[in-house]
Every structure is written in C-alpha cells, then in structure tokens.
Length: 88
Image (tube, rainbow, N blue to C red; front, side, top):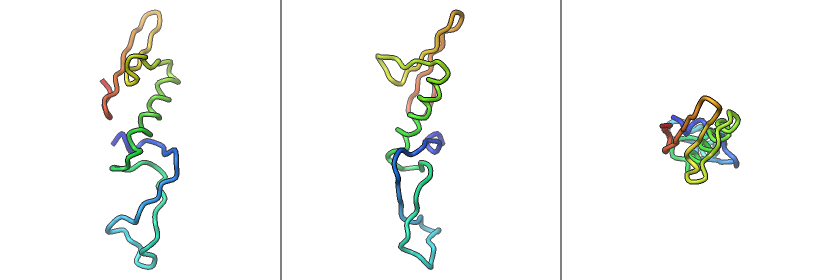
C-alpha cells in the first residue's frame, strides 16, 4: 500500500473503473488526486515523498546508492535502505 501514499506531480485522468461507471455519463473520466495501483508514476511519487520526509529528519542520501539513507549524530549511526516499497 506504500505506493498509494505518493502525491502526483502531474494531472492524471483515467476511465471510470468497471462497476463504478456512471450510467448517465458513461464517457466521463476521473481525475486522480493520489496514486493508484498500476499507475506507472506511483513508485516514483512515493519514493519522492519518502525521500523528502527522510531529508527533513536529517537523513542524507548515499552517493553510491540513492536508495540508501544515512543519519549520523555524535552517538547514533543509522542506515535505512529502500527496496521497492520496503525499508531495511
């Protein structure tokens, strides 16, 4: 469900989903407010949102692997690795 939390950078429209077609306006389309399953932009929008969140909490993205985030203070060293929609 992680990909459902991404914010879309551009406007995306889709056909009315089967079972939810408005019989009075069957050719109308729906404007998406958030990412949905199967949307090609969903993984990227979720990663961008997660990256922004981690950076506001003083994590730094690794130069070797942009999916690896590092937090370091005087007493703490923390690594967070993002793989698809999992954090290790």
